[in-house]
Length: 195
Image (cartoon, rainbow, N blue to C red; front, side, top):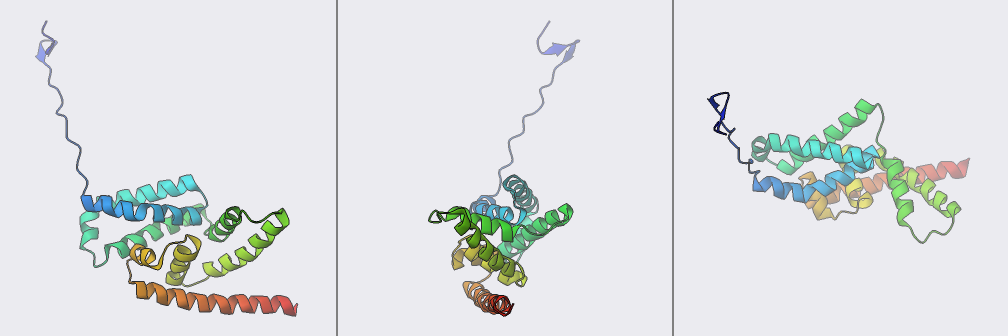
């Protein structure tokens, strides 16, 4: 019996397909934005594993529709908007809001090695939660800028690239957000004093 025959029929070997080469621009985009998207998703979802899944799904969807994305006036801005909508959908599906105020405050406490006692840590967390809760109430663009720049620590230029806007636009949103936060936090402080 010939090894190439089974039951008297010739055996055909399935053709091996070469892997599809992904666009170089996609890999560059992935390298630029994956970590930022991952950190942003972790901040809002409060779950590193879930954030990883969501970001992976977003990049697969971007890859699937890559040619259309590249035709957009600002691919980075379109991808950012899509990514944020996926995070919002995940939160809506879970029936909850963003975990950003708690996650950011907790991360801040863990990052402060100089705090010596639990009491000091809780005092910092309490004041930070007020700040992060105020940030969460900002208009969408101001919120994104404050999260990317102050919570996640990205430069104004990197934030502009991620959001697909100019650095001047980021500065403008940052400045308006600072003024709004200052007013809100001062008002809150004054209410506590008056009590």
